[in-house]
Image (cartoon, rainbow, N blue to C red; front, side, top):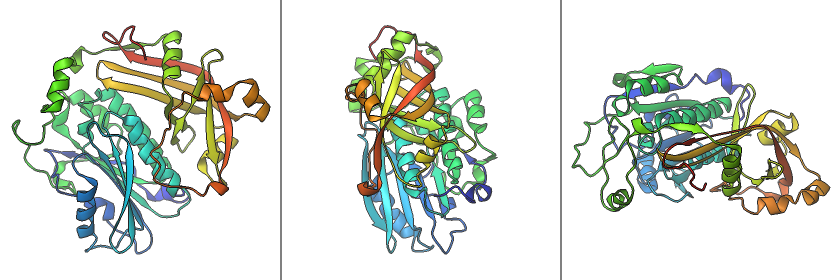
Length: 388
């Protein structure tokens, strides 16, 4: 997915405001196939309502009427899901990549997008992406955090030349938050013009738990048991505050991966494992670079970078740290003298890799993110004094 030439073709992101919940039986949004080229094109669907198998079967039916994409991908947000990836086939010979991520794991969703961007960055073919069921994130995150997440995702996808649109049920949040989400999109379209079919909102006793205007969800089964043990406060009662340097050091030392974003005219973000040296307050990363990769270009040009590390449990239990600085390569002597491997030992694998590169074409080196600024925010109240 080379950005050359596509920025001028791809319109700014469009938001479809839905009046009610979308039909869960619909697979890929028909808009991603609009003006499907005779040549190569790629499509991505984000959904909260389907299994990989149901998406695959429904997409096969859709492709009976249209030109097959060269590749397709679906990111499915499923509560309590472990990050995992799978692969299938649709149409005559189209690979379908599937990512299953819990909706409370915004980093995991970003990782799935980053995997696709990295795989397709060298391909000169249009990419169309549909983000549906955005409101399904609200029971797990406050509106401001979802806004920041969407802002980063949209900037990254647009910077990569993708054509992006989203669907949001307008009654799922308050007017102030809705206006916040609207501000992220160049075009806002009413539900009458939506390419997806809406259905009447489900009753509280229906199989699928409805989302409410406050962003809560009706729980059942095991979820009720968990809720009995610990009940989250109303979103309006939750506030945030700055983290101290000691809290930031403890948090970064205890985590192990985040999202590394490079600035510039075309934002670019990738998942990244890291090790943190709290005595020097620097971060170490072990990266594989190959000729022509966007990541290699950004590092070579000394593009300003930021690493965002977030840990979220519920609206009153979250922490987020942003590290801003420049990424530089470390020599072998520096790696040894700084005991980089020891600092990196606590890192976590920041990937659910479905795409296996040719390792003979990848150079693995150690890099350091030397912070110019370190800032963190956390929920206040029950998290005060809590570890990590």
